[in-house]
Length: 227
Image (cartoon, rainbow, N blue to C red; front, side, top):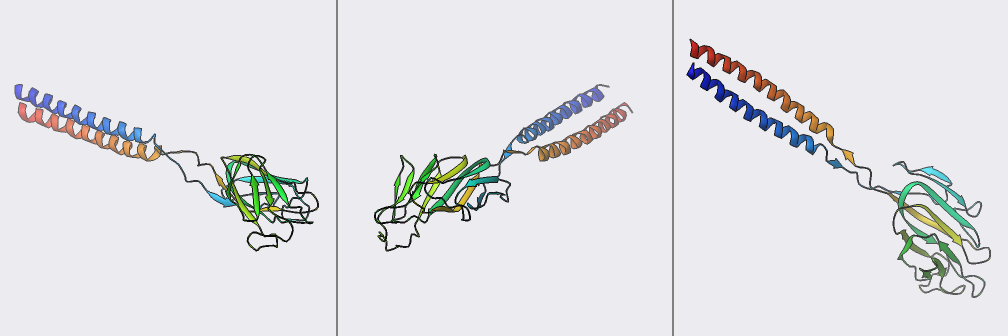
């Protein structure tokens, strides 16, 4: 009986040790299941002249204002505003500023929260008033381009839900935004729980099978010793 008792106690001690190790492994895996993965931001084009639409990633926009029958152009006193259904960062070009009527020059005012990326040689930019203008009189150019095909690039300083362009030059002159690209904020974190539970389930199943095998071995040891 003493041999039998010793074998049973030793076997139970080994079993408890193995179950503790399995439990620790399962806990670590379940803890890992709380980790998250996040999707990369997506950058997509948006047509400035369109009054409504949705990007492939699901960002919707509406727009109003601008000169009728144009590609979202603005002129003196006319504002075009584009509104998004979620925060986005944007980068775009302001196009087609030139000189007109002697010393007069075309200008536009941009909405708050934008910064200059690159300035066309024939444009001037006032960051305080957010006003972009043609730099000289009609027919003049710093780079030999006198046809008004200027393009200065801007971006938002952070996520916004609206961008706007207002004509401030006077007269019936028109300018517009083109090459507008928006980037959505980083997608919400995606829990990675299911795989961890799957692995923990496999461990639990293996532990149960080990318990059954150990009990059978103990019973066999008892029977053999008593015989």
